[in-house]
Length: 316
Ligand code: GDP
Ligand code: ZN
Image 1 (cartoon, rainbow, N blue to C red):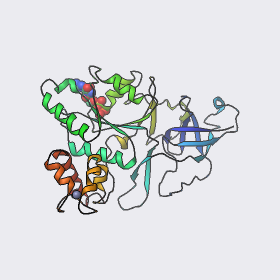
Image 2: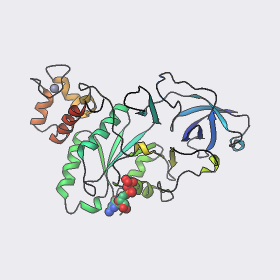
Image 3: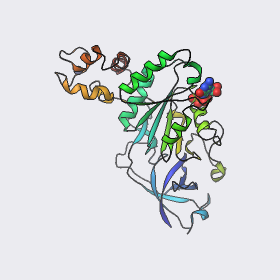
Image 4: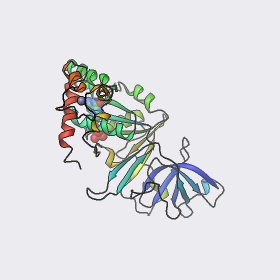
């Protein structure tokens, strides 16, 4: 048989595929060498990839580790996230493909929020073309004590054009809203360690504990299964991609002049800058600086922007 399926797990040279939205993972290997058009990555097939497969069997249920499906091609990706293998090499590793929605999970306190870190995650999503929702978690811990800080945060990011969902994995607040956003989508949860990503995923689907409940490895038993990249199914619909590299992503190489394009609120306004390109730092007649002065662009976002421009050198 031949068919199309989604890669739900990548364990070295072995893969699990599933014909989403059905969840029936079956093993697969690459059929010969698969080359991508833009051939700079170390792995031609990544979690989230839509692939064509072939199998000598007539039914999916007959596919086994001894008789795995063969991946014969990768369909066009709507987006993908990469990581550079090393600083110097031009090679990169694709960590996930075809992500429908990213959730940038933060908490104002415990751990204390670092807005530049969040802004870098947001910029990364813009660069990769992944719609992103900000999840303000642990509100049960600080909303009563710090209502102004919560309101300010929501203001900054809704003004910048982002959706902010307030949640508490502890009380369940906002979890239904989050679930309605994950429904039917391949989702990515990103954020600093300790903000509650695992707890939220568990709140979305109590059957799933990302720290222990990985996809059963029966299909890959006896095989080398380090460096796991995989997707979980949420029983209420939707899939979550979890990889170690995505827990707090936010490293992209950008030219100084490009960075402001990925701040949605700056993009529009920068059309009115006197100079193009404009770095919005020292140039006369800069519409972005004007907008910061009159409050249309938040000073916090602008400050993250300046930080990214300064760090620019470090990240290349
Ligand atoms: P991760 O590293 O982002 O996956 O964070 P975890 O899900 O492991 O959560 C870190 C800690 O914060 C754990 O002790 C959780 O019980 C706690 N936590 C997570 N979400 C919430 C929340 O909404 N409210 C409160 N009070 N604690 C939370
Ligand atoms: Zn400018």
